[in-house]
Amino acid sequence: MPIFDNHGRPIEYVRLAVTDRCNLRCFYCMPAEGITYVARQSLLSYEEMERLLKIMASMGIRKVRITGGEPFVRRDLVPFLYRIHAIEGIEQVNLTTNGVLTGKYIPDLVQMGLHSVNLSCDTLNRERFFKITRRDELPKVRACLDQLLESGIKTKINAVVMAGKNTEDLLDLVEYTRHHPVTVRFIEEMPFNGTGDHYAKLEWNHKKILSHIREHHPRIMALPFENGATAINYQIPGFKGKVGIIAAFTRTFCGSCNRIRMTATGTLKTCLYDDGVLDLRTLLRDGSDDTAIELALKRAFGSRAKDGYEAEKARKSKGKVSESMSTIGG
Image 1: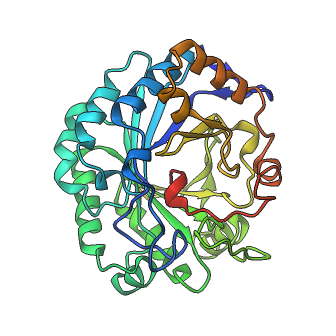
Image 2: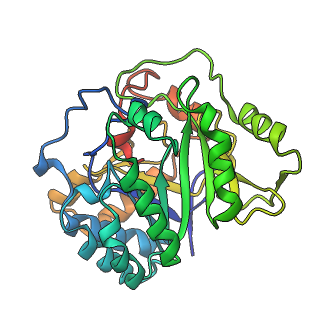
């Protein structure tokens, strides 16, 4: 049975960052010089992460998504993934990756029964990919995508929509779904770029993204909304794949949010926009038993923000978002 937060929403899904490090330098995630990474001893060990997941599974968590940074930057990730699959109560293990290092591990992902992969790829144009990521790695990402589709692993492409950077590529990504059984999800750009800079108004919000697609595909139709989902999915008649739009900045999906985040340093986030509500690493390392950790988690779930706006307003930094997405779990 799931545990419920103070707004009656079930908590069933945890996004676990295994590292804050990344091999790309996407400008919407971090500055060109990168971010100051935490010391390795400050990261949770795999054993600590596994212990927390076992506690959370006993409380009703059924779905785990491994994120980063880039997960495969951390050594020995695959054995850890196998161990997660063996945790009683965990029904789905999923992975978010940029695909640069992922290809050689796909046979293992198939063997362990990985449920799905979200592949971060903002454009299929090599020149614009380089400008966005500051790395010339699109051929490796495309090869990974081909392997994932051949393997049969359920695959989604996550593309952040950025004015003046990749909006001319949206239709190419939509077109990719014509012949491939993949969901391309367009995500509103968020302010987690590691600089603290905000924009007063988001130009390419979910409404404009859909309007742009609909101009060229007027028969696109919305699919039934899945409770707890972040994306509204659409189908274009005759296309093998689907298109999704995530209002990550507008935050229209908070009312059914069933997910929490755990950073690589053990900070619990009950909302993407909060700045951490519980220091799990200290609990793990000060000798707290599983019962004490479970009680601390229940207290955190019982005082969860109603939505992303409330969470952002309550930040200790007085509402100013300054961290990199790489540090909070993708």
